[in-house]
Image (cartoon, rainbow, N blue to C red; front, side, top):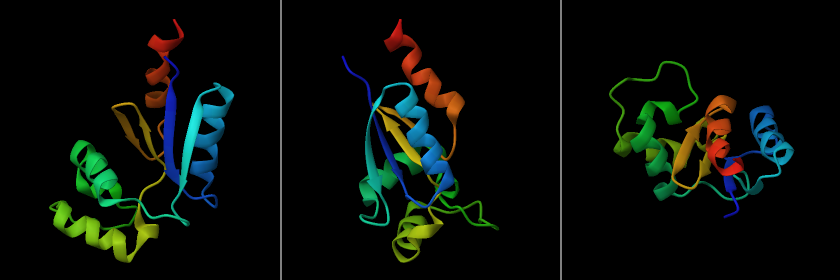
Length: 112
């Protein structure tokens, strides 16, 4: 079975560029979602927020630790550039932000 990655990010983001390069170098097919062209859907954000906690999705200083979905999703709808990127999904595996070590674990079993 071919492994595919979905990367949510921006063309202007260095971390997004590095993530795309990471997968390309490993010959992993990538579906790139440019958040400047299409904002992340609430359902996608919900997956990442439920796994990592809602504050993890915000790339801002002074994050209140008690943020909930009801706070974060509207904040990101109003200020989409506050989203921590890249968001990476490989099957059921998720990662928020630059996390090369985690991404590498997604493919170890598939390349054996």
